[in-house]
Image (cartoon, rainbow, N blue to C red; front, side):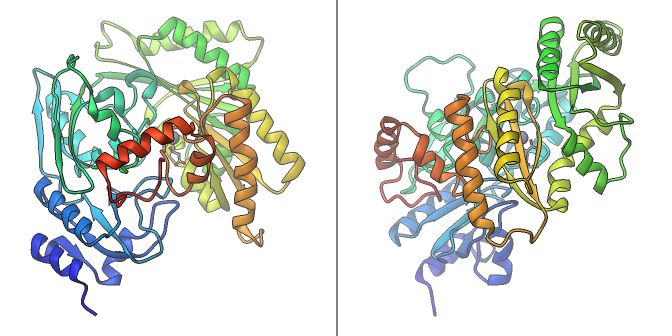
Length: 465
Ligand code: MLT
Ligand code: ZN
């Protein structure tokens, strides 16, 4: 049966611009972790004008649209629902512009440019975009989810590094806010509407980013900590003594590392895995002749360990690559281990040990077959609790997921003053908790904004109102 929207899209975007065969659509319909649906078709515009034309056509036909970047998100916000009625708007062909202004230290990029592609282009100029993570997302998707990553402690998240955006609203209106200035206090800074709001107010087609000088030296250590309090003590000591050069502070729980070693033949840093291994990274643009980071880190760690009554059990300095490989293999090792329910929570840093203990106690009491595996960005209060149980061991997976979410999110938000989504944004995976925890006044505001930006309510798979 012919579909008039698909025909109109094909006329506007050409054959390469539209995919409707089920086998070709499949990779756009499945998220990396959560999210699996059916698309009416995939539209692949190659310019802002084509994105605008696509959204105009979809609005005319009353078709709902989900914008999709590299589809590496973790809350199911970039895949269509199961209705078969949604259009996936893939930005993958909008990936040509990377215009660096070296003197201003800013870059204008298309929304579909991959993070790796941007960093490759910046490398010869001695710059990088320092929002750094294991996956390789597109810049537009990073804006929509306000990506944090592993070096947020030093460089901040996307919001801190984004100067301007161009977006297309639900009716196809192009809004250009491509500010290139670091200082510009001339009224509403509208870009913030589109940062971290998961594409419900508009589709990001271009962005102006500030880039950072690439460090010329890095040094890394893995520090064995007896418990969460020892981790926090270490973090505070490092910030006090080395705050200017501390660029990452990631933490891996014992069970998380055990999983990595079960599935990967990687070098073990410690004979016995401690309760927590903290990955500490220092970096600087100064040459090592001016600032010897290796020596500095070794000396500071030694001095701190002496004050801790053996709570710091051991420390190894070594190749950053080896340590980061451990960190980046956790997620997929856990998936090989069993069925996983992932949480992306943040609490005030001081509450990380107490929050984790509360979750452990809850599981021991109510779900003894579920293993708590934790790791994450303790430097910025982020913890990824991954709950794992043997594949096939649970008859009704969804019921268990609901029970665990209903128990753990309120613990984070209500008891420990935390967030149920620290860095992965809001999507169908956690919509229920947005509905429950978002302030009604904020929802009313979102409703008013959606009226302006997307009156037909065609964009995205979540509701913020
Ligand atoms: C990470 O920090 O590794 C990711 O954000 C966590 C994940 O993949 O669940
Ligand atoms: Zn993370």
